Image 1 (tube, one colour):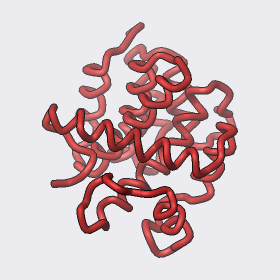
Image 2 (image 1 turned 90 degrees about the vertical axis):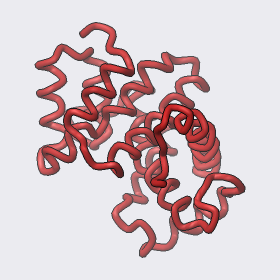
Image 3 (image 1 turned 45 degrees about the vertical axis):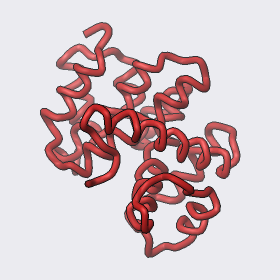
Image 4 (image 1 turned 30 degrees about the vertical axis):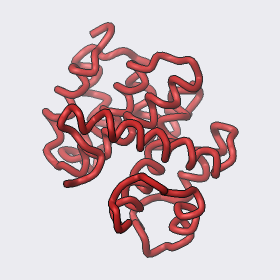
Length: 192
């Protein structure tokens, strides 16, 4: 599969992932990846695909994620740069994040999940009016979304060479824009 499409990525994701929350997470990471690809002048479709499939094997193989995913992607002939980026988001030493796509996937992954969690506890349950200050405050609250690795959120921004505030603001806007687009397709970043 030399040039996988979003449809190919969606089929792969939904073949292995049945959980609505994991699918929404994939959509959120896709949103961040697409936005950063546009910002950096990179291949928006490819970066979106990487975001969409980065955790495709997690539900089925939680103890061997993303190693099992690597095997599946190789067996199916997915491009090496996509496989590499997916492996690098898990902080595997044999897959150091060297390419911009690898670094962005790592930076987007945990933060996308955290922002969506923050939106879900807001009275209006949407991105409107969500501020960087609010996300930073929630990052300090260890009881909120405690499964989210805050160290990786800060490390991701550092690897991109941008202040955490800028990264958070960029991701809020990316998720807000993509939520509107996805809702037209009958998909959502947020549970209804």
